[in-house]
Each structure stands twice: as C-alpha cells, then as structure tokens.
Image 1 (tube, rainbow, N blue to C red):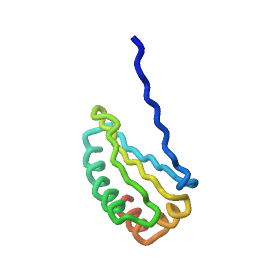
Image 2: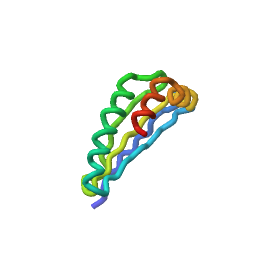
Image 3: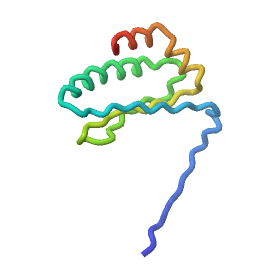
Image 4: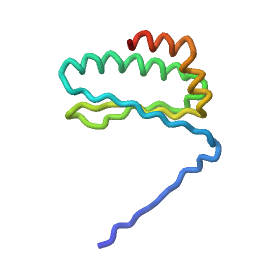
Length: 98
C-alpha cells in the first residue's frame, strides 16, 4: 500500500536574510543536570525580553536519555543578532554563564 505524502513549502520571501540558531546541551553526568537547570531560566528570560530582530524562540528536547535539550531561535537578520549579542543585556547574560 502506498503512503500518501503531502508536501508543503513556506514562503520566506519576507525574510531574505533569516538566521536560524540551534544551541544544545547534552547531560552526561548527574551533576550536569544542575548546570542545565541553571542555564534554562537565564536563556528563557533573555528571550522573553523580545530583543529587536528575534522572531521566535523555541525550546527543543532532543532526547531524555541521555538528556539532550536545546533551543532554536529565528532572527530577522545577522545584524540584529549581532547587535543583541553586543548589547548590555547580552553582556550580562555572558557574565552569568561564565
């Protein structure tokens, strides 16, 4: 029996310079869960601020064992992403991470 396939495409002509960022973390040891739980709220709060150019932020669970989670962000263009990374808010985020 043949399977019916329905293909769809997305019109991204409104975003010719779209940038998609994937960032993930895999936990190999129990102690890594503490690190993961520390990063989660910081990343979520930076995305909740809705910086100019951030179109969407999504949390992704790749696997539960071994635990591997991440995020996916859609940015309008590289310039808005770079501008945000150089801003004071992002600088504070970098200090919290290190």
